[in-house]
Figure (cartoon, rainbow, N blue to C red):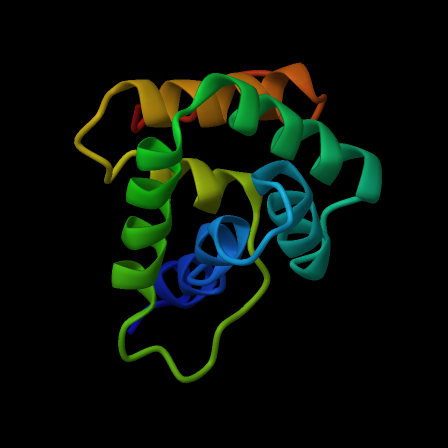
Length: 117
């Protein structure tokens, strides 16, 4: 398994955690992103934007894509915003990668979308 798969795999539980329990999705997303090395202000910003612009169903699809990428990965690495955007691109709903990219750009994490989108 290559580095990209390992890094993407680091986000396996990212949105699964966001949707479990009684804490709102934004707070869960932010907490998970911080755990993967994102600055707290960037993490909260992305979490707020994704909660605002994606439905629970879309967030669940994103979580499933992240989990599927992680299967079999025993050495997860650091998650980058580019990795997160690539995972979002695996979701069949075109709004998901668009909103993840917009959130990253709007929160000052990236200034342009990766070429794979």
